[in-house]
Length: 192
Figure 1 (cartoon, rainbow, N blue to C red):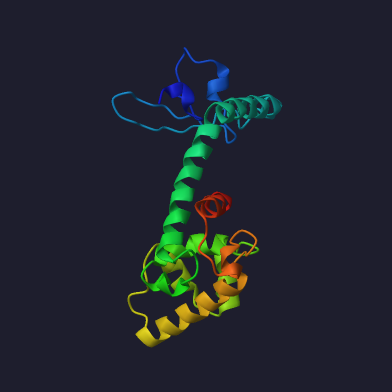
Figure 2: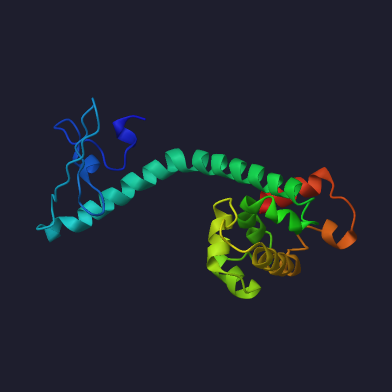
């Protein structure tokens, strides 16, 4: 990535003023051999320049967004679809959420499979489980020191809550009992 693509660009005489702007007026000096950051305020005492600086910063960000955001979004969407498809495989197309114990990393995708999609804190309250359980599962693990009986009970409550809230418009095979077609599975993974 060249220095021109940095939101906070290298400071040197050759760069125009636009490259020296950012919302908090901090400029980073970058040394090509290694990265050395020195921050200093450049116009905190010049409020008459703030509107011009903000406009320049917004323009810079907008140019960056148009040049890089679509590809970044496509890449993130492809990775998310892969993760959702992995969750489908791990849960027998959402028909066996008890497999969540072997695949705790699937929880964040399962939260997005509900109607409406659930924030972690909302799921904690609805299922009546501990925040520690949800946070640990979101990191792809199970709590190491949780009593097995308590863990199994909380996972059951968690699965029961998710099953009640799964979006059956996106996952029509849950109502019909049939296996999803490839087209249904692909569509559902792209939506989630």
